[in-house]
Structures are given as structure tokens and as C-alpha cells.
Length: 229
Image 1 (cartoon, one colour):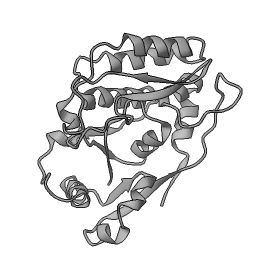
Image 2: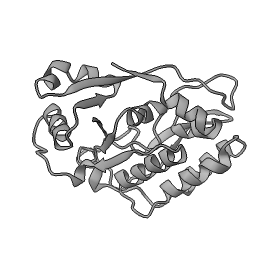
Image 3: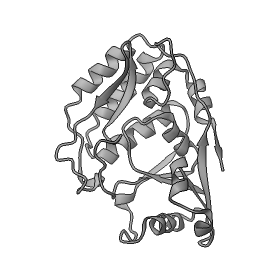
């Protein structure tokens, strides 16, 4: 069984979804510190004027607070308007915009709940079944070192492989996980390029851009464009 753990991000880029695609169980890491100026509450889409950022406010946001203790504002009108104006003429707008709207207007306002809603609904739209859990709802030693917490979570779900994003190579060693009976692998994304509204392709935008411009089959194909090493 393959397992991954990652902080929740708001409609992240396709590489994040490749990580989810690569595993059997994805744990939303919400019992860690909130990261300001990151992608937890904002992301980039493509408007006729180029890359454009949309943001959902997080009242009381602070790096001294846990993600699990914070909620998204209910005021999502500006973000929805920005997304609608940017993609109203996109080929898959009618199918995709309701998914975005349902997630951003989700009654459960915790950051992890809104992000989990978006992840589930996107994979459901693609016809792919995935399992998600929040780490804040699990019992484990939160005082342990980061690597040891991940190993403990893998053992808790009887996973034999921990899958990490490419940046994890700077943090974790395969031998350390092997000592605990785990195989450590990294998702190495391959180039993904698809038709956009602009003349020059802009990479690593929110998954919203991919969904708006590509068919289900195309999105699935792009999600598979990675190697596990």
C-alpha cells in the first residue's frame, strides 16, 4: 500500500494531483503550522491578461496556528468571479465551474475540509476513486520528529511505501525509511503542456486551468505523467 502526506493547498497545480494519483491513501497534513504567503489559500489561473492570482481570506491566519484551527472566509464571491471571468469561454467551463463553486462554498469551512472536498470532487469527476483522511483526526505522537511522524503514520495504515514530492529529497533518505520496513519513493513529474487561452504556454498553474481546457481523458493522461523513483 502506498501512502502520501501533504499540507492542504487550494486547487494546487497538477503535480500535487499526481502525488495523490500515485498513492492508495492520501493524508491531508492539517495538524501542522499554517504557512503564510504560500498556496494554502491562493493559487494562479490564466486570464486574458496573463497569470492571475485568486485568494480566499483566512481570518486570523498566523504561522503560530495550526492549519486545523483555521477556516476559510465564507466570502468567496471575488474568487469565483475572477475564475468565471477568466474561463467562461473555456471548452469545459460548464462541467468544471460547478465543481469549483461547490468546493469554495462548502459548508464545512476548515481549510482541510474545503480542500478535501475539492480533491474528492475532482477525482470523482475524472472517475477515479481515492481515499483521503485528515491527520488532525488521527491518534499518533505529534511531538516526534517529522520523519518519525511520517513513518508512524505509514505503520498505522500498514503502508509499505511512502511517496513524497520531489522536494522531499532534501529532507528524507531512503535508508532511514528502509530501516523501518518502508520503501521511500518520490514522484518525478514529466512535462505537461496543453492548449491554453494565451499564445505562450504558462506551466504550473492551478489544476483549474487544466480542467477548464482539457477533457477528462486528457486530464487523466496528464496526471499519469510522472515516474516513481
